[in-house]
Every structure is written in C-alpha cells, then in structure tokens.
Length: 519
Ligand code: XMP
Image (cartoon, rainbow, N blue to C red; front, side, top):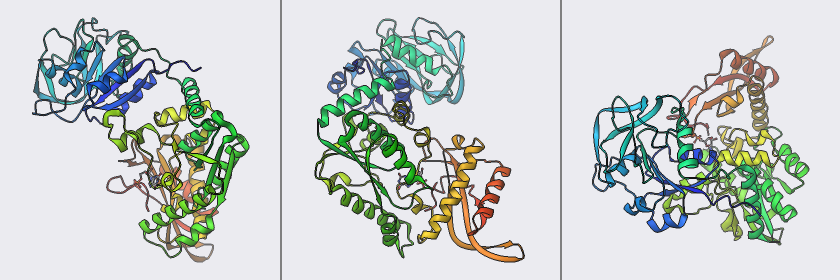
C-alpha cells in the first residue's frame, strides 16, 4: 500500500502571475504535493482540498481598483497558514484592513532586503541580515493590518515582508520562487515544511507507487491502448503503464516517415526490446507522402499529416477488439492551460494537433496517469522507471515532424537530405557540449538551389538552414549564440558529406516576430 503522499498538501491560489506555475514547481521540489486554484474558487472547494498551507500568488492587477481580485475573507479564519507573494501580500493587507499605495519608486529587479527580525519563522536558517531578492511590483503596503508586524525592509518599502505573530499569516513583497532570489527556496521551505508542517513524501518512487495503484484500480484486468510518439510524455506513460499492467498494454507507433534519422528504430528498440511492451509499428511513410503530394501550403500540409495520422492510428486500433481504454500523456500544465485553473477541478484532454480528437473517434474512456505532474517530474519518474536519458531529455519535436521543416512540397529525397543534415548538427552539438545548453535545435530544408563549386565544376544544390534557440517557455525565444567556429565545422561537414547541399545558413531571428519552426 502506498503511503498517503497526499496527506500534506499546499494550495496555491492564482491571481494571474506569470510565476504561478513556478511556485507550484518549487513546492513540489520541496517534496510536497500542491495544486493551483483560481482566485474565484469557493471557500467550500478550498476547504474540501484540505490544504495544510495556502500560498497566494502574485498578479498583474492592483488591489486599489474596485473589483480587483481577492480571495474569500473566510480563508483567513480557517487556521491554515497563508503566505501571500507580491499581489498576494497586498491582497492580504487590503482584505485585513491595512493600506496599499503606489510606491514613490516602483521596484523591478534586484533589491536588498534587510531581515528585521526572525520571529516570523520565514527567514529561519538564513544566516545573513541582508538578502538579495527579486521585486516586480508598483504597489506596496503602506500600513499594516491590525496585529501584523513588518519583518523585512528595503530602501523603498518599510514593509517588504509582514506576518501576524499568532495567526500564521505572512506576506512577501518579493518573489521567493524565482532563482533571482537566491534564498527563496529556503524561505519557501520554511513556510511549506516548517510553518505548514508538511512532510516531504512527494518523490519519484512514491509518485510511481501511487500511480501504479491507481492505474490498476481504474482499469482492472482490461486492455489499454497508447499512441507512442517517441516524445517524453507518451514514453513515460508507456513505461508507467507497463509497470502497472504489463501486457494489458498495447502501443501503436505511427511511423509517418517524417521522423529524425533512425528515430523509428530507436523507439522500437527502447519499448519493444527494452521494456518488452507490445508495440505495433505502422510504417506509413508512403501513405503520408502520397497524401502530402502537391501540397505546398503549411496549413494544408499540417491538416493532411493530422488526418493521415488519425486514419492510420484508427485502422490499427480497430484491429484489436479487446481494447477498453485509451491512455494519453496529458501533463499538469496542459490541464492548467486549457482549463484556466478554473476552480482547480477542471479536467481536459490534451487536444493539440498531434493526436487531436483521437478519444472521440475511438469512443473509449481516457486514462491520463501524468495529469497531475509537471514536465520535470515526468522526466524524474521516467528516469526512475529506467527510460534512457536520450528520450527523456531530448529537445521537443513537433507532431508533424520534418513536415514543418521542409518548406513547400515534401518529397522523399528532401526528407533523407534533411535527416542527414539534422543528425550531423545534433551530434556535433552533443559532442561539443552545447546540446543541453540550448532549448531546441534542428535543421531546416530549403528547396531552393544555390551555386557551389566542387573541383572545377559548378553545382546547384539545396540550402540547409540551422536553427538553435534558447527559451524558457517556447512563447518567446532567442537565437543561441553558438560559436562561429562551431557553426563553420557543422557547415563543412554537411556540405562535404551530403552532395545534395551546397550552402548552410544559421538563423539569428528572435521569436517574436519569427517563430521557432520555419513551416
Ligand atoms: P513555433 O514554431 O510556434 O513553435 O515558435 C513553438 C514550439 O512548438 C513546437 N511545435 C509543435 N509541437 N506539435 C507539437 O507538438 C506541433 O504541431 C508543433 N508545431 C510547433 C515547436 O517545435 C516549438 O518547440
């Protein structure tokens, strides 16, 4: 029987900060399960969640506006420790009778916080009197609510941290969740593990034990189908289901012929040979090519790839009449982003274009064993389950694969050329230690011919573009500043080893306005 790893939980109430998910990840890193609820959540749903501590996030609003977001007033009378961060602290101050004003000087970026006293318990184990913190706000608390004390000051705010000596209510004007606040982790640890008294049971082994028990309970002796893509999420679902239900699991791997060099074989080696999972590989490269013939427009290409994927998958799936469940690699950020953290109870199915609509076509109930986990937790349990690092830490790869990296019409020889060029680029990045430093890197095939000279003759061959980006969220990105000598080496190898290429370029555009993929 798994330990009750959900006995001690933290609830995060979201006021819309860009850092809310980061707070949740930090709490999980401290070994404590947490969920994010919308600030409009009812006091009943908050009580039902039964948290041992509550964190109020930051947010873009100002509490001085009429109708600005707030939490139910009763939340402060539950006897549960509360920590407000930035807007969360201002909201505490305002709701409990203090005053919030626009600061004379807005504080953004680094600031020095002087710890006024240790009585709050928030700064336990921090030896220095002054710490570097990250601020991002325009308002500040100018008058404490009755019974509260200030426990931290900066040159701009005499109340940069506050607490109530008996009620276990705390506020921080700065962001402890970001790495720019070096002592932030200790501060959160003090709140979560000490003040809220949560044990650290949320770790990979316990998460797996719990998931395995739940999967067994949910599916019993019935059979489960999973679409394997080679990506991290479906790989971890496969390994987890295999541990839970062994050969009640069947996987379908649609090889669309648009994968990276040897990727299809690697997927089969890992799951069929390595894990002994029943994997049916549908070699459908030719069908995809046929359906893509004559299509140059990116959206038409995407639609064709999506439709063929569904056709191939369904044809395979329908062969097995015993299947009763469809497994999906939905993870917690998919749930949060699609549902907008509505009351924390919303539950949606991953619906991006890679596998869009499969559940409705198959008319099967869906099982999503990763739906409470962040990506870093998914990777950690993948490691614990014995999946290779190459799969778990591989750069993201779009569902339509090389289909969005060959401009214009897709042709078989173009795919081959691109696979070779991409493989040279990636293996050089790994060899020179750059692979893990960039967020995503790949080659793009441009179907234009450019002149080159080989020996005495001129040749007109294709262009390969290299793209490597640094990003946190893939919404904005910067071109990675790879050394010129490195790019030159990759370019030489590509042109010398692939006769169909006469020129290599490097993309230095940022996103926005450029996107990461070329389409
Ligand atoms: P863009 O090109 O929009 O890409 O800047 C942002 C990130 O999304 C990935 N991407 C996809 N991922 N299915 C996916 O799973 C897709 O259809 C798809 N299209 C783009 C892209 O590789 C980058 O990481």
